Length: 85
Image (cartoon, rainbow, N blue to C red; front, side, top):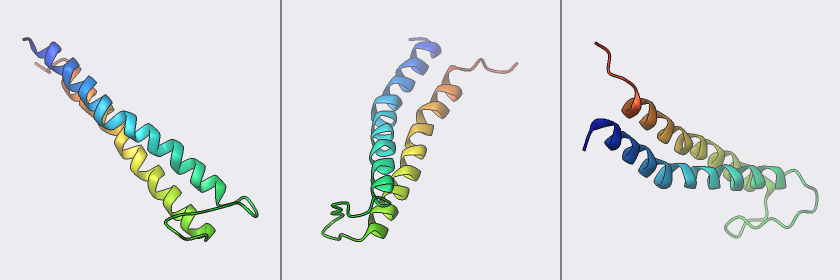
């Protein structure tokens, strides 16, 4: 198996294991953050109805999602670039 094939397999694996959950975290985090600003919204974050809890969870999920989405990008760049001479 050559290096390019190994790089493609590593990138696909990182995308499935990190990229997809990262996109889910971005979607859920943005939804929770936006919901915290809606008046009279039915918020239930681990038993708390405080909008600050929804905002905190949303921002945390957004930060985690960005990190998880960045991992496959870094893996792809590191494994698929041409080695310097």
